[in-house]
Every structure is written in structure tokens, then in C-alpha cells.
Length: 211
Length: 211
DNA sequence: TTTGCCTTGCTACCTTTGCTACAAGCAATC
DNA sequence: GATTGCTTGTAGCAAAGGTAGCAAGGCAAA
Image (tube, rainbow over all chains, first blue to last red):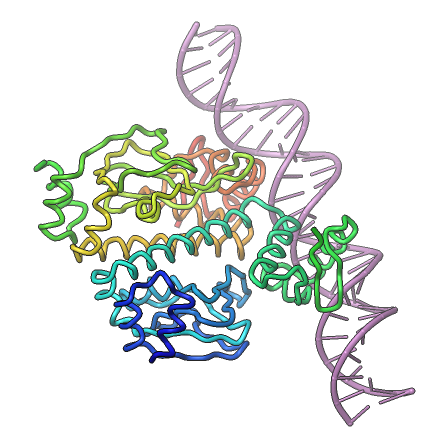
């Protein structure tokens, strides 16, 4: 239990003592391996998840199983969907896949309503999570609606760089194509052009962002 | 004041007595004309808006002023953005334009925090609004990410039909092109194809959805 | 009635994106 | 070192979507 509390102190310092104690008492830690699917379209959620380690990738699926990358969740962040769905026991709309071995504190959704009214720091946290996810979705919409593939690719690479904190991005062209719902050939083509413009340096299984 | 309360009873029946009384006491009614811009990108929000008449169109803007339609707000609905931005006094990300003369009850955002903790029916309303708007954004993303222009056009027309409750949609090709961030020629082309497939009947300044 | 504006239809043409196919390169394994 | 599989580079082609330009028709104000 003390274990949970120290994790909360590290990654969720904005929580007040009362909240941290409650989560430490009622929550539990769960770990996931890279590749695990921790949430799937259509599934019911029973817990709110507070990420404390690793990285989770959120994506949406098309009718024919196409994927479309939306955003990453890092330590200190929670899944907005788990709030949304929690309250009314609704199904989720997104898939969440672990990209780096991951650890999260799970809190049964039964406590949600009570916490929202009783604890101010939780209330602010939830609203903040909503706001940032809402914003994230808006950015996604803007990028697809207003930008062509080359711009989206550049935006995507920057997002990767920020998420993983390195200009050396380990990824294949194929994976990028999946995330952007494009095709491998197109991505390779555009990356070549970017390389000619000195924007990236291409390696096998990796891309280096220049400047 | 009684006026406000009867409007609330009609369009927001899920509110409990206490909440309706409070809104009646602290809120005020404001009317807007078609074409009015009631919220603009970058603007601070001072009030939460509960629509009681007319129709408001939410759209996002690209860097070069391109528009992109997202969804409509009807009586009984509130702007999720006004919740999001309210709490932390953040700027809005969307534009809201009145498409049909509109009336709304405005409630200063100062009451938001208090209401959330004190009033359950308000709390549920806010979460519900979040969920439906979140879903709406997800649908928008899916439609742009996975579907070609002809499918998006069909989806758009159905959305219009549902919003205005009529298969006879008063709109020009140019306006549709703006909403979908496409071009007039493309929309006219696709509409012609739809007409040949007996899916629509084209009129001047209007489109009739068949079946 | 005439004038002018807006809407729609249509043509020609270009760019972007996507698909198929194939070759070359790297890496791991036997 | 040969085999196998995954990744990347390229070429050729097709479809979708965007641009420019112009003509015709409707509608309304002068």
C-alpha cells in the first residue's frame, strides 16, 4: 500500500493526502507487457487507470480493421475514456495498446462518483484530463482535415520525438503507414523527399529527426 | 425568473428542483440572431450556455481560415467547451456560429465548481455532455480518417437531415464544400453521381434526400 | 426589362495518394 | 555460407480530389 502511495506522490503530486490515501487503500497495481491490449473497442471498463510507468498508445479502428493513431498516455496521465465510460457503464470507443512495458494503478469505477463530489483535487484532475484529451482529439481532427500527408507525417514524427524524448525514432515505414492510415509506399516516398530536404536521416528500422 | 424555470423544465427535465431554482436565480437569457458568432477560437468564456431555442453550429478553423464542420448544438444541449474552458479559464478551440435564431440560458462559470460538487443532476449532465461531445469528435475523426469524400458527403447529408428534421435540406454546394473542407466542383460532381444513383434529388439551393 | 449576382454544370488538367510488382539490402538462423 | 524473412527503394499505373475557366439559368433589385 505504501508502494502505491509513493507512486502517487511521484506521478500525481497534485492529489491531496486524503485522495492518495483512498487510492492507496482501494486501488491496486497492475503491470502490462508491450503489445498487451488493455482496452478494446466495445469493451466495458471496470477501472480507472492511472499510468505510472511505460507508454500506452490510443488508436481508433475503422470498419475494416484499419487503425488510426490518436495519442499516447504517459506516466502521470489517465485515460479520459475510463472516466467517460465509467460513469454510465458505457462501452469504450478506442483501443489502447501498450507500447512500452507499463504499470498502472487501477481504481474501481464505483468510487468515481463519490470522489468527484468529495475530493477537489480529483475533480480538477478529471476535468483537466478531459480538457487535454479533448484538445488532443481536436488537434488530430485538424491535422487530418487541413493537412496533406507530408505535413501529417512531419507532425507525426515530432509527436513521436516528444513522446519518447529522442530524435532517433525506432519505427518502420510500415508502422507509420498504419498509424496514419496510409500505405507503406507513400510513407517511404515522402520520407525520401524529407531526407533530400535534410529534414531527416533514414536508417533501417529507425528515423532520425534533424533540427 | 419563472420564465427561465419553465424553459429549464421543458428542455432540461433531468435537472432537479434545486438546480433549476439556482439557475433561474443566477442565470440570464440571451438571444442570438442567425449568423452571430457566439464563440470564437482564442476567446475566453465567461458563461456556460444552455441552448433553449434554435441551432448552433460548431466548427474548427485551419491556419488559412479554412472551416471544418464538427457538430450542431440543439435545445437541451450545452457546449462542452464551455465546461472545459470554464474551469481553468482557458481559451476555446472552436468557433460557434448561430445557424437558426437562438436563445440560451447563460450561467456564469463561477458557479461551475460549486455546482459540480453540490448537485448530482448537474454533475451527471456535465459528464453526459462530455461523453456525447467526445463521441461526436471521435465520429468526426473516423469519418475523415477512414472514408472518402463521397461517403463523407452522404454522412454529412444524413447529419443535416437529422439535425433539421427534414429530408429537404436547404443548402448550396458551396456551403457543403466549406463544411467538409473540400471544393465546390468536387461536391457538385459527387452530388450528380448521387442523383444518378437515385439517392438524392437536386434543386436550386436545396438537396432532397431520397429514401 | 434589364442588370448583376449567385448557383450550378461541365471541361480540361494537374497533384496527391494508393496499389501492384519487383529488386536490393540487412539480419537472424540453420 | 545459404536460406529465409523483413525492410526499404523504385517504377508504372489508376483513382480521387483540387484548380481554373467558362457558360447557362434563376432570382432579385434597380
